[in-house]
Every structure is written in structure tokens, then in C-alpha cells.
Image (cartoon, rainbow, N blue to C red; front, side, top):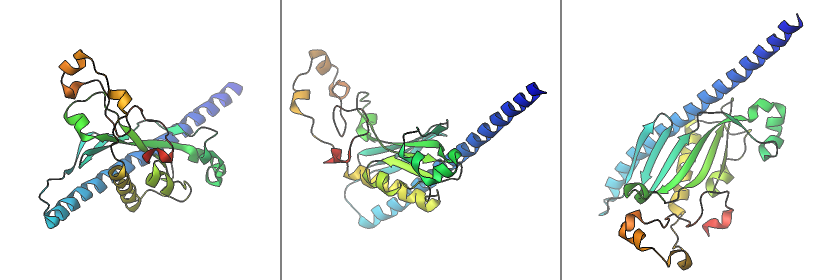
Length: 233
């Protein structure tokens, strides 16, 4: 009997945790589909507005899908990649979210799916510059109640950081995508420090400028890390 009780507890724990993760996965995938619809609407609206403005320049604004979990939005000289992770995560114990009344009331609210938003230069893909750098400008966390929290840069990180109040809707998806685009537009390419580019090997030069091993990115020399807010300055 004791063994049966132990197995019953084991199986209940398995079913409970698996069901929780399946619900979160469904909400996260639903959020990605919301982002997809918002991006498609923005693309259509941009084409109308571009025709009204009648600029003599052709400024790109289009999107494509590389699979079920990835969306690419290209505008101007930039690309935003939205990548959904297929696994479910929990915030670490020392994360600020874990100290909120919302999570303390129900610890399972801290389990989340994640959609990462990366910014790359479009030329990095166009010219196959494999050493170029992309930046993680935001991470969207979605939980079992379809509430979301964003860790990110400027507009993204400061506007959407109340986990207990923000529920993912079409309107909130619009705000997130538009904020990510606006941040990217204002996140400019900086001239690399002279000391980092003053020397180049014969081999690098012979392999053409596009294949050169010097990195290009909006902030040269840094793979993504949690930069502080002054990094844009």
C-alpha cells in the first residue's frame, strides 16, 4: 500500500507538471501567432503609407517565416528575428519576479515560455557576413495565465515589466512589436574603435571585404550581454 501511495504521488506530480508546461507552451505559441498577425498587418499598413508618402527611395519593410517558431521582420537596414524556445523555464530564485506578490501567491506562475527578439543588420545576412553580431533586445516571458513580462532594452524593458497586470492580447502584441521596431530604428551603428580595425592580414583581405573576419555590429566587439541603459549613448 505504501508503494502504491508513493507511485500515486509520483504520477500526480508528473501529470500536474506536464499539464502546466503544455498550457504554457500553448500560450507562448499563441503569442508568437499574435506577433505574426501584427507583423503582417504592419507590413500591409506600411505599403499603403509608403505609397502615400511617395518617397523616391525604396525603403524595405517585409517579413517571412523560417518555420513554426521563427519570424523575420526586415525594415530599412535592420532585421528583427523573433524566436520561440520550445521548452518551458522558471525564473531563478534571486530574480525580481520571484519577489512579487503575484508569484508568491502561486509559484507556478513563475514558469514561462520564452520568445527572444534579436536585432541584426540586414547586410549581415545579405552578404553572408558570418562574424557579424546580433543583439538580444528583448525576451518575452509568458505564463500559464497568459500574463507576460519582458526583460529588454529601454522601451521594451521599462514599459512591460509588471508581470501581474499585463495579459497578452492583440493590442499588447502590437505595442511590443512597435516598441521593438522603434528601439531598433533609434539603435544606430557606431564606428568601431580605430585600435580594433587598424590591422588586417593578407589572407583576410584576399578573401574579399564581405568575408573579412572583422566583426560588424551596432556595438562592435560585444556578443550580447545584459548591457546597461547607457550603452546606446
